[in-house]
Length: 414
Image (cartoon, rainbow, N blue to C red):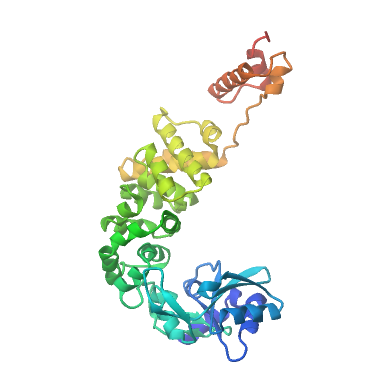
């Protein structure tokens, strides 16, 4: 198996790139070694995209910085206290971190020293599938036997699961997130039990860290199963401060092949936790969501309510005009998932509406204030009110009235 794994890694585009080979050449001097570690190796073996590349090395951080600069590469001390230098080669950033080993641990505040022992460095990591290294030639180094777990898509903590979690309680959420992204079969029983025993540690985490991890989890392929297990263990309520519509979210993710929006965290949170509108504000504050993320959730919620209170089939033109294409589709998918969860599916309606929303040319209101001013209306609040009234008339005509017809209805200027 190792030879086939080495062959796969050696043929990876990111490993053959001139940029990373330049980094290897710069760092690997005077007996020092460098190896790619973690996500890039795991993702390559599991046929996932590789968005970033982390490198571990025996060279001390100041030496890494000096060697990179000597080689004409840009070096940035992004995490010097942790031994991490970012080296930019061919416009791609590589995080290069000196091997470390724990001396003492105080939660996240572990006291570490830099070292040269690859196995000790591996034992500091979280999961066995993340403790895989590959050298510049594509040869795999597996100091803890994590290859079988990786290929078997088993997410297991390194060493004592309770101990690893106590080092950083975010690893509870990472356990479920990594499983949702890469796992198969049942969750590791030992890891799940440790997460259950240590769940109150989540209360010590900052909102930013929880929110970042949860958004990544929601985008993962097996998020529905992972979130159901989290909910069963009481972890969802601790992490979010609220309850979850797990069946609705299951239904939403059953539509992954129908619409890509089902994987988006904002829509997922609306479906999972949107019992009342105030839940959206609470989650946004708790997860420190951006204004853009908050706005998308609010728009999805409003579009969902419009679908629910519109008798018959609402107009795709009206929905996209009111909420934008994304907002209208989000609202439709939220209603669709609730319908599936409640076994009241109307597939023909939902599929037809989704198609209409995707194809709809969003109407553009043909009037501007200048058009009314040209007829003698004066700028000011009354002009704005008149424009809004004419817009309502135009919408009620199903966007059929032309600019000229709207001007005729604007009345004579005072």
